[in-house]
Length: 371
Length: 255
Image (cartoon, rainbow over all chains, first blue to last red; front, side, top):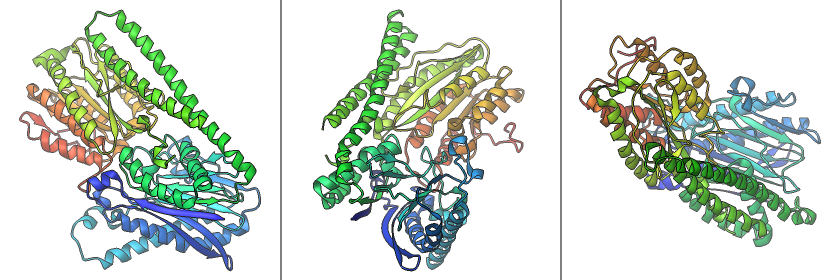
């Protein structure tokens, strides 16, 4: 059975600033290829600032535009994706700002994908104009900043079709997955323009700025989320190996209804403690993909994930302790209270603070590993 | 285990790095400019601590200081959490080796160096304060710095102290430095004619940049870079003896 879930929650800073929730997430079903059905996860994150003051509406439109555009591209993909194919393609070559963004060209479906994204852009723009024209004429934002910017948002999607899957993304947020062997992976390549609270957007960027992935082996579990949730974790891999893996594990141990309740309680809590941003999530879990043999591999899988993080925390701790030792020795050689000693003591205080944080992290990771 | 318990880790706080590039050449002794720096910095720390503690976006503010005279040096061995930061006075002597300061900043703006917080970084801010024409070589160093992705994204503010029409090279250097690049908005340059106002300007700029830059939330329909500029123009413009100059069309200076 394939379980799906989509939900969104206002962020702590949005609540503090009396702003509406500007994320949207949905699960839809799309018919293609003469009656075949595909399950679709969609998620859009409306930009937070006041210039994007209709971005919650823009986010809904991005989702509905995707649903409308999907059948045509699925018709093409079903004919072209053959068994064993797995493609991961970032932004078009002319949009790469560093080698980090560059991915191999996709000879099979690149043109069809870019057409699909152009269609989403076009449908979204059409919906934006229609909505704008239906509103009372205002003399503020449109003339100053342009209509499209008012509706600006990101867009992420993932599709489970018959015999294949694909995912796409414009802007920040994350698409992460687990394979049938419980191994975490991040299907859609990154875009280095999406960093430090900056993102590509439906209101500025076009088909060549989308990234995508597709293949014949459908991920056993896949999750989309906005940056509000993704940024609570150090990396997308960590998001997959901790958060999504925990959801799958809880689904088997406690049931999906309880997991959905946990999501509803936990996402606002995480927002309050970490990013302050709106939170949204959409996911599927194929309970049959994880066979009993794979389920028994879940704990080792988690152990490996925790083990990896533990190793890096221990390495950082060793570097931190080495720096503390070095700076302490330097201070001992200085006249007490001299300018240089004062500066080094500042650095030392920050190092001790980090050492204390790392000790807590390591303790938690060791507990996780044993449970 | 509840999902909310998965990451109860302080490391998930994002970090905003503020870099101060402070001119400590001999001319900074004139009118006790270096004294203004030494008096302003301890007060800034208190203000920044309050900002860091109160922001909803859970980001920490870290400070780094690079001084430059005959050579450049990092005053602190690593970026310091503003909660731990203690200022120790700097002295002024020597030339104005801005090139070395740019090179040192470029080395710091690397993922393995100052920009290595596990939970990621907000855009850094770089405040450059200088009172004289830089020595040769700064342009090539600035070219290298401007290719750095972190620097391109950074909020950049230049404070010119006692700049005269004859200080053509200083004017060019600070104008080029302050170009927003990927941060957007317009350059932020503050020209101080009444040197006793330096103390007020350092405090104003530091608190404005950290308050807006360490928060995700935007307001007033403007980007953070533009909000920083607007706030500084509004507040600094009201200080007697402080000017916010306009850029020349060729981008090579201001008037």
